[in-house]
Amino acid sequence: MSGVLLGSILSAMSTGAGALPILFIQGSITHRFRDTLLAFTAGIMMAASLLSLIPESLATGGYIQLVIGVFLGVMTLTIMEKNIPHIDLSHTKSGIQFDEKALLIITAITLHNIPEGLSVGVSYASDAADTGNLIAFAIGLQNAPEGLLVALFLINQKIGKFTAFITATLTGTIEIITGLIGFYLTSYIGFLVPYGLAFAAGAMLFIVYKELIPESHGDGNERTSTYSFIVGLLFMVILLEIL
Image: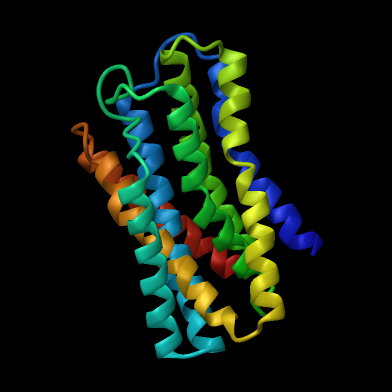
């Protein structure tokens, strides 16, 4: 219980950690830096899905559970994407590409964090002790640039830096709740563990291929982003070997 709570808190608060530099940055953040960060995160999440979540799902269940779980993860993200306004924070000079009100954007970002929290929670329910920590780490890395981009958006909406920082931080707190929900569901209903792990893998792979990779390649930094993706993947492989 303490492990999943701590992991969920740390991954959720990574959103605030990512937004923290906004309090000190005077100028704008370059597209190259943001694209490099997004691609590095994509590599981390790809390795976590393929080398940790999917093998663990196979070990605790089988191919049927894996396929069903991955499919459910992908479909969940697909449904959410179709029903929640897409947030394109990293393209265009101002960092935004829409004119919806800030409240709608904050709500959308918060809802997007639900499957990420579930991913952390079900990972801690696995018999592999380190799986939860690794997935919490991967999700936390993904949350950091998201928090920075949300804070940048809010500042572009003429919101003060400190308010933008606090608001961006709070968008990640829902992951604590959903993390605990995912953990308890899979802990007390044991047969859900392989489905939950596969669900987390499917959700993460959807985010990588549909969101992170396209966004990191959208501003002419394809080569730099490709290198960063590979470095992120290798970094996670090394981390898996060490642990």
